[in-house]
Image (tube, rainbow, N blue to C red; front, side):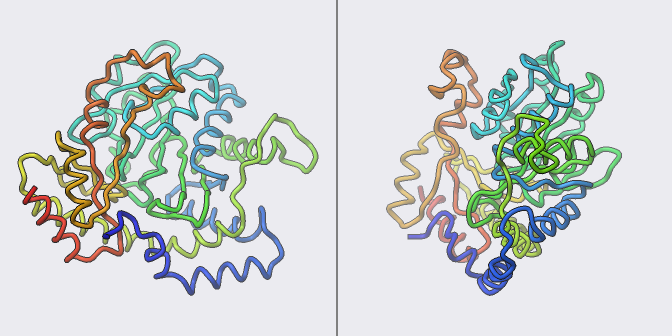
Length: 368
């Protein structure tokens, strides 16, 4: 069976580096808020292109703490609205509702799977305070139109960069920037399956905003900037030293791994010729965390590939507005999001795949 994402094989390439850095942490006797975390935060901020990086426990906490920090800083308050793509992993929306803010769901563009910037302005109201874009599947969701809307209406631009580590995109007036440095703040997830993955849960917030960075760090440390002094009702959300050290060891390989993903994606894009399968358009602004195809016979296609030893995944079979936890939205009609949920299939696309394996999958897709 060709695994969708063989994590053991992916991490085994850096086995000696990971073991060496873990040994250093064990020998240090310091396991939280130490030198390894400081070093990774410094290196990741430099890589992303921001002044600050704050390590937190996971990607959901990163987004939640950004919004909570804006509330503590007086930028937002309960009941304010945040525009967010309807087509996303539920964590994006959980971060909003957890802060007593109102998600305003906007449909994606069927050609990119990203939030449709043509539909955003009509969703803005006097209560809108931010647009949260999601670089879904590894593709940059930012457009200059989104930037213009944020400037026109005085909105914060928040990036969910959980799936797009290392993605570079053109930004009007700024040249090429790395996702995570485009908006006012960004949340990152280092879940093991991400392009930059830890060996457990970890996340980070990147920003150029000094006040926001300090607030996020305090809120993630029980609301404390000074030991036993708690100015805010915070939470425990800290990246541990082991995960920070592992991520730092892997960071220098991220660009090469992303390049390999692009090479595999290129094979699919150029060679799959089947009218029943919609292949993503070629896109230099993607690091292909996920390679999504659309097929009206999705479940049949998945079974077919499994029979020939190819493992695939579905991202995401139930959209947020159809989940029971958001029952008040179950009546909503969001046809593009719903179409993606019933037609999307994710093909293997990872840095340890060979050209031969990719071509074997192409042959199967073309004969389906």
